[in-house]
Amino acid sequence: MLKGLAITPPILGRISIGKVVEKNGKRLPEKDDQFTITSQVQTRDGWLLHPLNEELRNGQDGKLRSIPIRLLFNDPDLNLRADYSLFDRNTGRPQCVGNGETCKRLTKDGIQSLPCPSPDGCSLAQGNACKPYGRLNVVIGDDDPLGSFVFRTTGYNSIRTLAARLHYLQAITGNRLACMPLELRLRGKSTRQSHGTPIFYVDITVRSGLGLEDALLEAKHLDESRQVSGFDQRALDHAARQGFNNGAFEDSEEDSGATVEEFFSAIEVEPNPVAPQGLRAALGKSSLAQKLESQITRQNNKATVQ
View 1 (cartoon, one colour):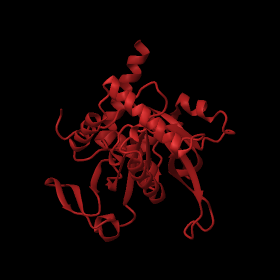
View 2 (spheres, helix red, strand yellow):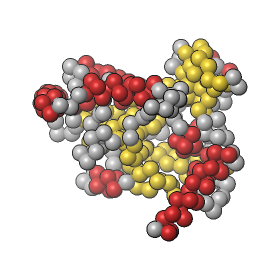
View 3 (cartoon, helix red, strand yellow):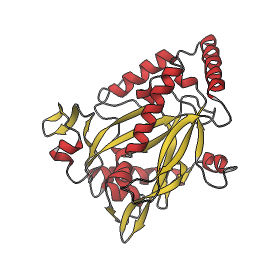
């Protein structure tokens, strides 16, 4: 295993409750009142929709506000990783990741472990540069039991709610969290800060149509069935934990560019005939952007030849 490279769950697509739109020459994040499930392919018009997006939308009056899921791991902290994150807005590279006590920070002397005072007490976090950043991996459907869709968020409400639900569900299931039939559910609320405008956040509940007791019984039966077949959930959790700990930062430069664009800054549009606008805008004129442009060009040429 390559040291310094975080080994993360295989990603089949993305789940979002917003998108990036162009306004007055800038690409800005825009919130939505429904889920969108996309592939990992981004074009000039945005992320391509995943076939599950339309499939799950049917029967929900056109608004996708709940998604049936299972989780990959029994450990809540493997399913949902949340930390304070600061990204370089020009390159998309993570610069500092902490938990409020300690952090890993990229400095001129390399990656160092330092105290983390949280964004309110950190001089580097001025201007809302450092935010809570959560990544939740979930399984949708039965086609790939180890492939997942990732929901990324910088919202306190989503991170706090998801963390509480996962730990509570782990407790009441007797550590059978990965066997529970669950669903992602979109909820809305108003706060003083939102001036009465609804804000939306993500919750996890027992799947619609099931009571808690029924869901617990289903989880128990699935766990027993997996054990009979030789499925080792404990070993899977252990492997995932080792993979996450193998790198200083979970997010690669490739993923971070889109994260910066969506959550961390308003970015000037820079048209480019090769790279997707969102990716190019997020990465600026860095050498990383040039490498990615070359990679996309090679892929396009290869596809043409084939």
